[in-house]
Image 1 (tube, one colour):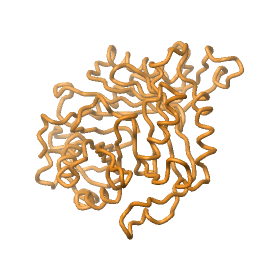
Image 2: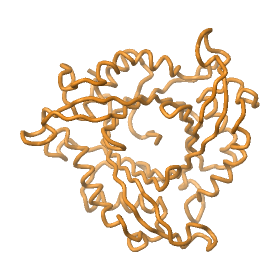
Image 3: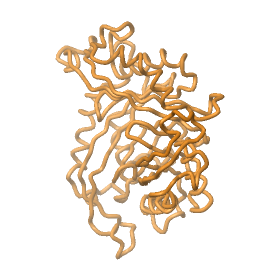
Image 4: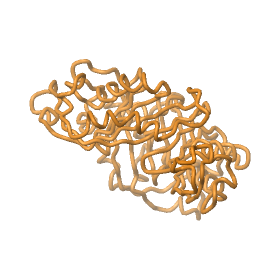
Length: 372
């Protein structure tokens, strides 16, 4: 197994709540100035000490319980009664403060608030708020430098998604970056990219996800100094991030597996055989190949990882001899160790047993966690 001294582990939990709000600091004509509502989704990621829970493996359930109790006053309530100017950022700050002071959650690295399917804020370990907005465009492309027979060498298409992340604490704005401002900045790019062949656009002759992300960065950053990341989804299960310096790709998959937690006490439902449809995400970081335009071929990731995937999908994981236990932290560490043996650029594994709830094990620390 991978030496745990060289990895870091975050436990993550999420929950939803339904609330009404109004942002009086916005202009009267703005749609969010008046009373309206959202289905919010909150997430916390924390570096938890071993003695915080009654037994190893109880971290996710305990964190979920405390997050749910923390946001309970907001559910089916008017947020303004609890939070002054309840922007997504201020909700995230309110949750973080309560989790730390009233619910004894240590080591918080991130708080995320998603207010719609395409917008939200991530509060990072330094307390800086990254507002994000998701955009979609339909386009065709082909990769001209791939080996003969590679499927991406043929002209094909995708429903691309782009997430623009902006660190609103870098600017001098009185209020958080307005989503309408991001929409206005994105509109010319949508006109350029939607229903187009990307290879025909200047600078996109080799339009990999990595190249598209850096192409967008170079054109958006001068207009949006607060830009912190560009995320490009080529499909719903793979894509790339770029922060102006470093590229990171990911490949996501689901697996249906049975588990039990050996360290859970007798009588706990976690000690018995149960199961999940897991979401597993592999993150890989490498230098950009100037010719290929990618860091690692998505197809290669799938091919090399497939034997590991088949060993855990539709399997009783408690029968794997070298898997210490069935909690998501143990599973993530096991996958990271096995995966790095065949995919050296693999440096992070996310394993979620339900949406937003699970563990992240990283070989490169947690400070640079990118929300995707």
